Image (cartoon, rainbow, N blue to C red; front, side):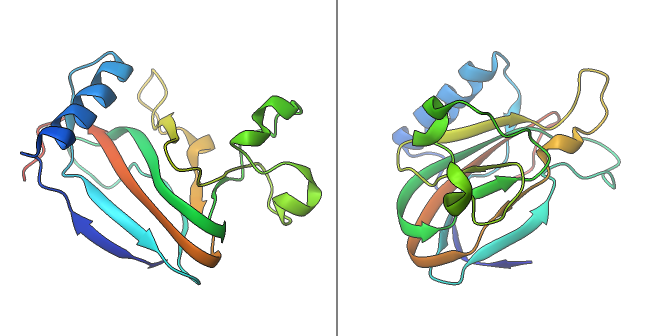
Length: 160
């Protein structure tokens, strides 16, 4: 499913608290967030296709996701959303893979791991059904290192 390294982040750190507050402010809600985790992918590292929401949960779920890129000194390693329509607008090329060679045969949209950028998505439609368009994967890192942090907003209290 995944080849990576991970580490929990101390939520009492002032920088971490500001990061979580900014994510909550962006969403316009005061939901809870799961404990933050830093993920590092070396050459060959990846994460298979998945949803961040879980149908099997009886109560609570991840309502939104921020994938923040901290380090992207790598070839490959983008975050691919195969069901999102590819924008035919070159202004997006700073953040997504453009052109047939860069897209490497992947369908949909692949966000590049550009340090200091983030990808945000809602995991559910307003009616509460899971958003099928947010199926995604961390593509294999061909060389170098990709490091990121996930910030998940949860609709119930999260036990730490």
